[in-house]
Image 1 (cartoon, rainbow, N blue to C red):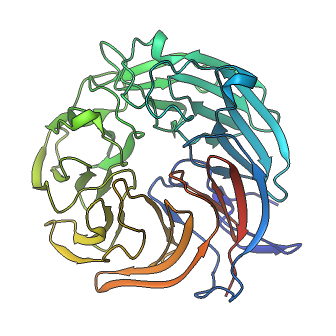
Image 2 (image 1 turned 45 degrees about the vertical axis):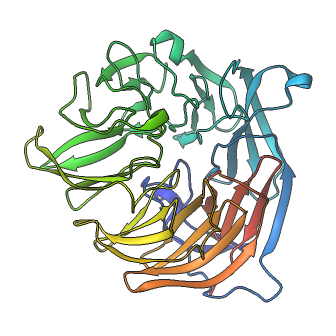
Length: 415
């Protein structure tokens, strides 16, 4: 049967529901949307059914799922294994380990040195990854065989971010893109996916913690990157910035992936709040539309967007709905989604074309809710794992979530 991108058709085969996979950070479109099957609006009284649970080692990297395989990165015990990072491939149906790949990665003085940060990207039979201190690699999806491996930070003379590299590799056409902050030029470095060789370097900004975002403007494709000094627009190819808007952030915490909707770039920072940038028709046209330093402060979670409104987990006030064009706040959830904390976190995902979303908060609670400009409506909640900052993955009617100790698979009930 001819495969359709992401297995969009929903079929029931031997009790398993097949729907869109989650092969990279924030899903196929990179915006936290998942074309899910028709999921139930309420969960069973006895809770969600756990399909399997398996032990893993520590790490912050999100989970990826593709064609019946689950991928994540972790850092095995240093005393037993030395200083290494590891890629794990598990069978999606059972959690059985299919293969592992390990390599030496000396963290040195890296703060929060628990483990890798970036989710792997699976594309056309290959697994692309980026370790916390700058190792880039490509593996065979089925066997884990190393196809190429580079110390990208060292070879490209890049300055490592304060808390290590966290931006997942981004596939665009026939290149794999890394926001690595190479010197003297190379905010984004493009590699040949077959060989790992550098093809081009774009921009001068140092690396932030997220991947680049590909946009289309007036018929042209460009990149948006958020670094420790500026938000920049970059060409897809050798060259310097098309535009830049200054945004110097404390400790370089350019973390949450930017969004681009309705001609507006939005970045949401922890210390200095949010900035909205209006892009014009010409490549160099970019102006600050509005900024809010106190009332809209994000952290790790990329905001969701729908019909002109954004839904952001504000670090002081909880989940917040605001208008993208003006920054005007519509409502706050008074910390219903996740408890008030110094570093609150919840990974937010849209379900299909509806206003329903799934959120995995830092306490390991999976929350089913409705997000509308009129308010927050919680439909159900279940404890599925321990404390976590890692983004879950989705496939069929299942969620795959990890902590520093385990990875779990739960079934999401259908209508």
